[in-house]
Picture 1 (cartoon, rainbow, N blue to C red):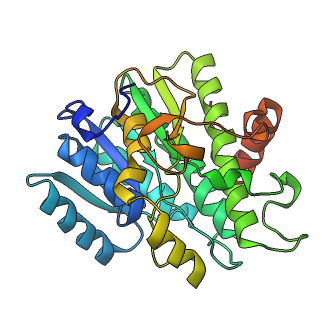
Picture 2: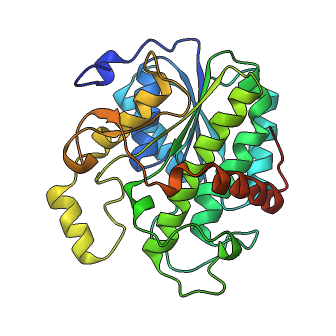
Length: 300
């Protein structure tokens, strides 16, 4: 890849359809703007309709003539995920880029509509179900890509506890829960890649992380917000690895991208490193089976 891959290297996407979850703020807004500026039809999948409207106005300000569709999606509610997939499939015959970006970040202990811990339910299980339900549209689109969003926080957890995903038997810590969900994202992506290859499908499953980016300036404690404002790179820079994974030439399934600077904290897109646990195929297969059981969505 170029040493400094930027939006200037984005290919034209005029005939492409993209879905971006969590599109109303942070990385999701930047990803939506980048794809729209390149000519894609971008379906901005958001939980809050008012915030979606404001985000769409911002994208159109940056990319006049942007082709946008707003559709409601609450990843913390599997019924909403199913409704979104049904409506999208009825309206669009193809899906070129699925950016599974929406995320719960360092929230207090709470449950999704289906009783899952909020981080694992939103960040992994919601996207696991959405990807499976949209798989027919991805299959109908040669060269389609799935881009999942992980985090350096996948290293900041005591590990994936399949027997206690929802913190029912262990003390709840926000970073442990968030990190577990982002570890699950990596395990899921690499297993999805293996299964797509085994099925002979022309779909690339990739994953990216934003490094230390100021994507949610109002989240975390006062110290974290101060450090973010002082040291973090912009959300636009943090979105580049995902945009590279989504659209750059030569991207292969199973690749993981992040900032290429010191410790992957900031910089332009480059191959990223992961923990040893994230690359464990046996654990990934067990997570897949558990995810099918919890969501009721089975595929590949």
